Length: 306
Image (cartoon, rainbow, N blue to C red; front, side):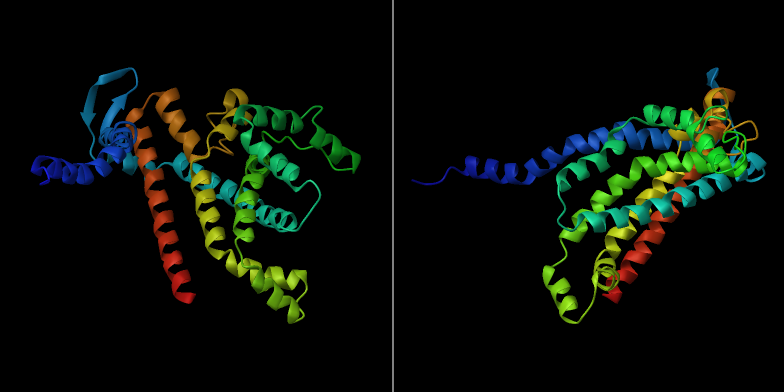
C-alpha cells in the first residue's frame, strides 16, 4: 500500500511546528509580563511623567539620567546597596559552605536538618522582618538586652548608619543561608568519591580534603551563588522597607539604609515621579548586565583553567 502523501506532509509539518508550539506559551508570557514592561519603562525614563497624570508626559531625553548622576540620594542609595550587599553576601555564603560541608557527612537526622535549613527561605519576608524588628528594638529588644548583659551600651539599630545596615543584612543572611547551603550540598554530593579516597591515601585530613578537593570542585557553583546573591542584593527591597516602619521607603530618617530598590519606590510611588523612577530601574538593570558580563568572563576563564 502506497503511503499517503498528505499524511507524510502533515507528519513533517507536525515535527517542525510542534516544538515551537510547546515553547510558545513561555515566550508569550515573557513578552507580555517582562519584555513589554521593560521596554515601556525605558520609554518612560525618557519622559517627565507624574503618577497623578499618566496621560500628560513630556519628552525629557536623558535628563532623568543626568539628574540621577548629579543626585546625592542616588549615590547614597548605590553606596548603601553595595555595603549591605557585601555585609549580607560574604558571611552568608561562607556560612552556607560550612553548613553544607557538615551535612555532607553522614549525620543522624540529616533530612530533618535540611528541612530546618530551608524553613527560613520558606518564611515570608514580612514575618521574618517583623521578628527581627522586635529583636532589634531600641527598648526591650533581645539584641540590646544581650549587649547590656555584657556591659555594652544599647544601639539604636534603626537610626545608626552601620547598625541599621547590619540589622537589614542579618535578615538577608538568616533567610538565604540555608537555601545556598542546600545548593552547595547538592554540588558536594556530585563530587566523585574517588577524589576523597585518593586524598585520604595521600594523608590529607578532612580540612585538607575540603580545601584542596571540595572547594576547587565547587568553583562553578560558588560563582553561581555569588552572582545570584549579587543580583538579589541589587534588588533588595522588602527587608529594608518593612524594617524602617513609617520611614521605610526613605531608608531611615537620614536615608542611612535606603537601597536602590527603595529609592525607586520612593520616587515612583511616594513622590510620583515615574520618569525618574523608570530611570532608576534601568540603572539597576544596567548594573545587573555588568554583573552578568563579569560572570560570563569569570566562567570562561574558569573553564580554560580546568
